[in-house]
Picture 1 (tube, rainbow, N blue to C red):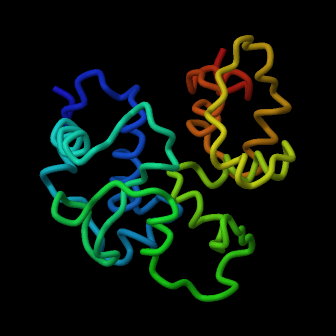
Picture 2 (picture 1 turned 180 degrees about the vertical axis):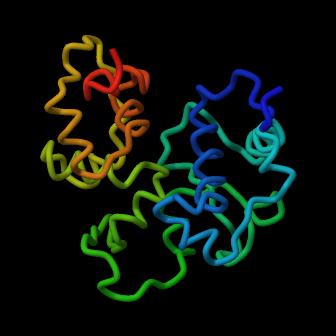
Picture 3 (picture 1 turned 90 degrees about the vertical axis):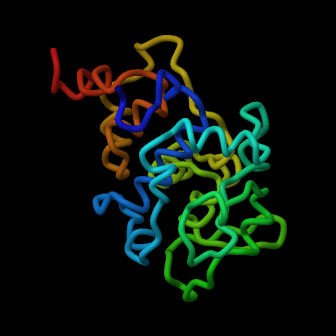
Length: 200
């Protein structure tokens, strides 16, 4: 049995939220671990080892897979507390922005302002639940506006020929991991590795 009791539901957008939550808190290799796990924030055992338990809570708490991501982000009520049923709720990105802990001015290179709220690029990516490298690639390499880069759904390449070695290497150079690139194009990691000549 899947150690997290996923049972074939890993395709859901909610699972990406769940997986990101656990990675930020318990994976020291996560680039933003210091903002969660490094501060002592954990995911309760009830959720950490059982996606179905988290999913059941999420649906009961009002999560809707069909709503736009910006209208429902996972928020901790006590920003220094753990991820657990008693300390979490679904909130719009505007609501969550008001609950963010203060950050030092100039702590991050890129700062964006939406609807009068200024946050670092990393914070906005946290709020929208998207990959920082992917968003920065969209802004720097594809010329997207920051807000567009945050809310544009992941592409699914209809033609695998669109996934060129040049594009993949450019994305790798921007800091994206192979899995993030695969998610960006909606293909398998093997496809990306083949473009890089790592698989035949």
